[in-house]
Image (cartoon, rainbow, N blue to C red):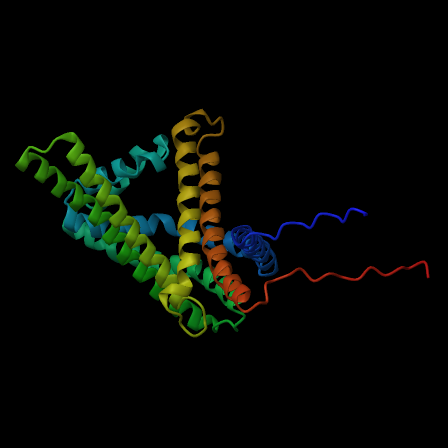
Amino acid sequence: MPKTPAEAPPASPVSMEQRNVFRSAVDLIVGVVIRGQRNSITGLASQFAYNAFIATVPLLLLVIAAVSLVGGKDAPDRIVSTYEAQIPEAYQEALRQVLTDAVVDQNRAALFIIAGAIGALYLVGNAVGALMQGMDRARGVPHRTWLHTKIVGIKFAAIWAVLMTMVNALLLVGQDLINWATDRWNLQNDARGSLLDILFPAVALLLMVMLWVLYRYGPHAPRRRLLPLLPGILVAAVGIVGFTQLFGLYVQHFAGLSVYGGLVGVVIYLTLLWGVGVALLAGAEVNEELLAIRRGNPTRRVRIPVVDRDN
């Protein structure tokens, strides 16, 4: 009798599930890349980086002056020390001096709060405007009018300034409380380190709130609940942390070796801000692509038929 070909064993449910997960992941990545190209998120991220770069100094003056009212006159010193891994050594002393002069007395601190607020709110509002435009493109909705965009952007800038002040105040006050508890109860270094490990996730939670505010209220579209926004928030947070860590590595290992001095530092900082903008806009695209996949309509590149010109 002729031998019949052996039948292939049926695929196990586990392998089928893994294959579906892999296919969904590929669909998501491909869809986000295509959507990002269509919506020009890299160009919008450049607009965000430019405006955020100009807004850095007034925003710093606003936040540090506000924090100094809580953290005391040594707040600039302590904040620069907290972020020393992300600030090039050549700029640390200059930044410390500028911020110390800004908060040397309460009247001057109030003046810097007012001046910083005017500059920071307008410039950060411009940066947020670029992000809102990208989120409108992701949602497929019309943009706000120019005036409406400015007003909403300034509102965002005010909310972010308050949250940034809370973040830095939490860092300073939290460190003070940990130092007080260490001295009061003679805690060991391990216990103190554990308390510090709890402090920074609390700060990260506040940063996540900043992202939630942007994704919920940024688009000119109906507001969504937290759950549909969560994947994009996580993607944006990971991207921001990743770019910040890369910037920290540059500061630690290469900032002092630059032949061109501060110019390279400016370029690297602009690149960091551009990466932050890409991460924020990519998070919005992730949310939209996940919804498209759930609806069974993942984004695909439109194939243009090849025309045979010889016939």
